[in-house]
Image (cartoon, rainbow, N blue to C red):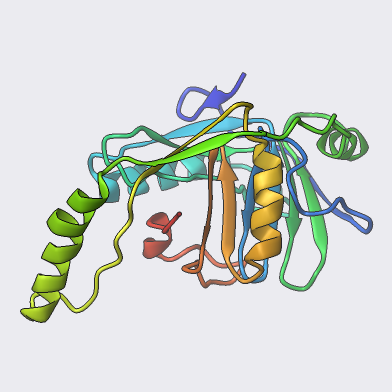
Length: 238
C-alpha cells in the first residue's frame, strides 16, 4: 500500500548505475512514465503519495514541496534525489497527488541509466520486476469518437467569441481545446498508447500517470540536476 506523506518517516533506498537497462518505455499500464527532451523516467509501484491542493495552486505546490522534502530527509549523500510523478487535469476541482515510485529507472542527459529502489528489494529483483514480460493486450476492434459539444456550439459560442476578442485586441493568442469521448469495445492498452506517442511524436514531452496519458510540445526545460522552475507545476497535456 502507498504511504501517505506526513504520516510516515523518510523513505530510504539504493541508487545504482545499470549498464544494460530496459527500454525506457512502460511495459504495463500501471507504470509511471515521463519523457522529456533529454531525460526519461519509468516508475513502478507507489512508495508514497503526496496530496496536492488544487484549490490554492501556489499553496498546494509549497505544501507538496515540503512533504517531498520530509520524505527525502536523512537520505545518504550518495542517494539520488527523490522523483515524484504527477499529471494534473485542467479541472481545478479534480483531486491531485504527487507519486513517489518504489522503483525508478532514470535515463539522464549523458545517456547513463540509474536504478533507484525504495521498497527494500535488491536492485536485481527490482529490475526483474520492472521488466517482467506481460501478455499482449487484445486491441479494440471498434471505436466511437464523440464531441462533447455539438459542432455548431463549438463554432458559435467558443471559436467565434475568441476570434472576435483577438480581432478587438483583447487577446493576442488563445489555444482552444475540445473535449472528445472515445468509446471502444475493449480496454485501451495504456502502455501501447505511450509507445505509439513516443514513436509518432519524438520531440514531444510524453507522460503516463495513473491513466492520464498525453503528449505535449510544451515540455519543461531545465537541467536534470536542478529543481524545476515554478512553472513546471503547470504543464500542458493533450
